[in-house]
Length: 457
Length: 97
Image (tube, rainbow over all chains, first blue to last red; front, side, top):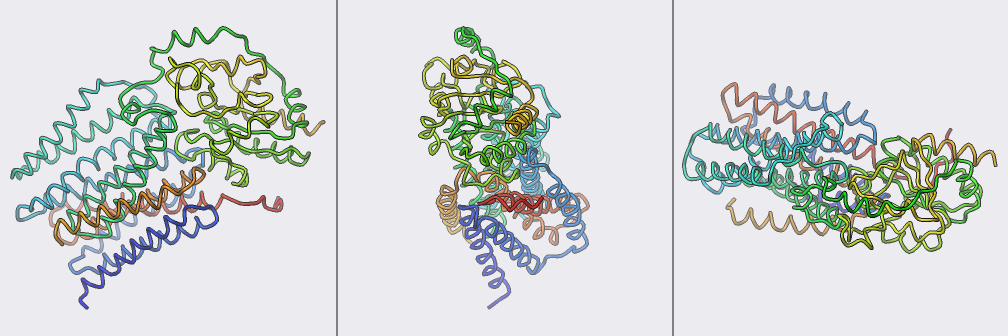
């Protein structure tokens, strides 16, 4: 068996381990091991690659890897769980950047004209990798709140940029060896990545991040075809497929199409008439002491966390309150909307960090049947995902979006900073429901106050 | 390897990806994302393969950056996923405080 055969076999072992590892992500109990198995697969793939004939320039390889380790390890070790969406965006971005750079070098370094079956995937990798790199970096800046403004360029501009990138790619595929054109492709694709993500805010981020993740995966698979590397093809495509599914699930959870997320603004003015129509009622405000009494004498309390909980860093206080209530015989469950937070599954990670057992975290379909027997729903920093207008107001921008049916529980307590409307910029009739009481203030201190009152009972 | 074989691998991998991932519960979507994120860091292989075959300072610099990027993606992705998954617990621990 030749050395090339052994390397090919090792690649097969490596991508098998990726698949086995991903399969094990189905349950929290096996997931840790699954991630480790995938990491072993990666180590095997890298090892096999380094054993390839012709791999050289060891000093440069060591420098590159050393820089990567020096940046990646401390970042991964120290990142706060609330900052996880921007960290994932950043890691995703550098992956896309790596694809784009590799594509450029492969094009520059080819002594003979590349055959079309390598050149086309290479151009695809360059375009998609560049979109992913720039888009992810903008997503990072927005999530980190380093970039606040948002300019919505007309879709025609974004379409034109894509068209330019593709047209230049066609020119190169047709035989041009101009390196400048290749850089221009990266440039126009990068501009498209920036302009596509800049206008997207807050609640749409779960869709954006998983789309960009899928993009990087696809570009890696394309690079794999260009470089004749099976490990790259399989691993890249696995990610491309998983990212696409997640994107679809997130968009479905908001009852919007992916195109709608990227090309149409929500809450950009057109909804003001509706907000005025809904805002007729008066909201009832309550005190921490009252909430404490209600919670302590409940049988079932359902906590509905939203991004507001993450912003206030209230997850540990919430977990402490739950523990205190459980000591008094109250059952506490958590209702997690698929798009709560800034990335898919964001709330689950925050609550897991606060030692909430995962069997208390209920998905929307499982918990919605439970609200009828719920004594108190405690909504913490969530808004649109509880808005009954999604069921009833056909004119509402969130009409049709599946929501958590908190309004079916016996009483609702909403912890909120103020009466301002949520991300979608629409009024929430839930707040004016007679069985709803509002507790205004910072979520963390409100929850801490409730806890103190419960302990004093 | 010819293009058609590679396309066959690509399509099969896509179906495997769909199958494997659609069973992952919402609870684990964040670790799933960062785990798959780490896996696409495999592009670092491209950098490792090319760097021995190319000449010129610019090519070398671009590839060193690509390798550094890929390494950040792989190492950071797996570590962060491991950290997150370690937090998911079935039962409350016996009050270590």
